Length: 564
Image (cartoon, rainbow, N blue to C red; front, side, top):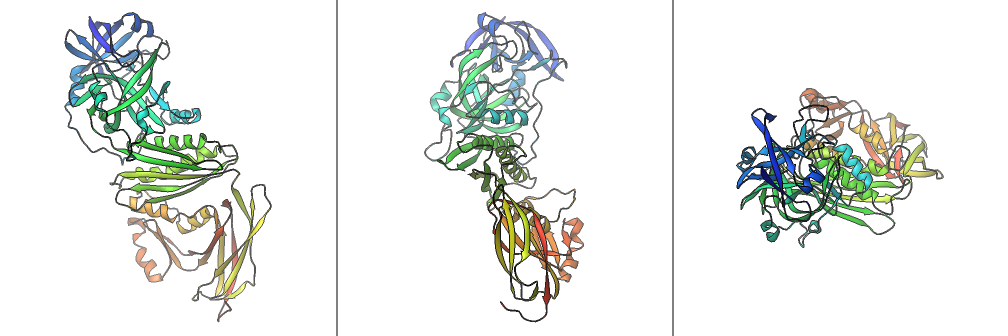
């Protein structure tokens, strides 16, 4: 017989009897045994094995045996649990404390931890860590569950956030509480925060081992992400919910006590008093009413960061009084990377029949962020993500119906030509936009084509698509982000019979033939694109919404000077 300690209600661990049934050789992997146990006592026999109980220390006398970490399937009648031996957990304690964490590899959510002994639901699996999403709209929670399916972080339990998630006077989060650090003992509940601030996402388990500098918890991984930097807080168990399907602890996160630095197969390790590295995210949503501002910090972890930003922005757009099926969104802002100028964002999500505009805005923003965050050449840390969202109470689509030359189509170099475009906003009368353009003095005689277009068509003309096995480096990705044209404007471009090259995300137009010949050998080695026609933007004007469409106009350029 042994004794385990866990919190059923409040913050004080309570004892329960544990009957040791035997040892399962290699149950956790080659050379890694699991101790099989049965829980006794009124509370564990009523609740069964509970999500959030993982990490509960088990003692025989004064000797620490290990932690309750695994359960058998669902609907088990007897409270049978698997114990991770303490020797395996102490291997994590002895790992060096690192201040570096990998954040540049592509996002790749890992499967839920645990070695199931069978595929019919009756094998051992890691006890779930109850995930609390405080402040989130149900639709945002469903999006999180879809994005995190199979990782073990898709099971969201009832619970609340922490008052300590509010920012300090200097704008930072999570000042360490010495009294909270002193309150941690084996059997205490602790939470790892994935998002904190005005919204919160946290996972909770139980402390197995504590020394003056660090603690071990869970007895299994959260994501087995290796070296991490996650805020570590105390946790209050409001109630333990008994259920044959999914018993779990209802949690309130508490005061910051340090940082989880390792997420390993047999334990997670937290360093007491350490401040975590997180990515600040600032979201401001404008509309007809008061602005809504959200200040957050999200985890810097490839398998979680893009999903955390996606769901946080989606929630910010859902939970405001300006949100409706007919609301369009314009997202601007910057992704700030250490050592580089801010990378701008300018994205539109018009309301329409293609699905949720809120989700479209969040997904476009997340994709733009991920291109930079997951870039293999990035070495600098993400310093902050600043997002500014305009809510527009209408469908913001605008169609280009026609375009024409509102003057003679016979012109001379240096002339001013007036282009008139007819656009039709959604369910509104058509209107004309008059755009004057100045022809360059050295323009060749003959036929000159004008491209009257939306931003997408222009960007396609300037940056010809190319199939390549090479990944885009960070400098190219940043240059491409800066070169994108705003979708709510109409552009008039000259299509000149000169070479055009795309190099490192930048477009070089009207190149001399000698330069084009010099770039030709680099087309494969440097991913240079060459085109026999150059697009040069001559003028632009507001379109009043997200423009769609293009038209080609022809001018005849004659020799001799023209009238300005």
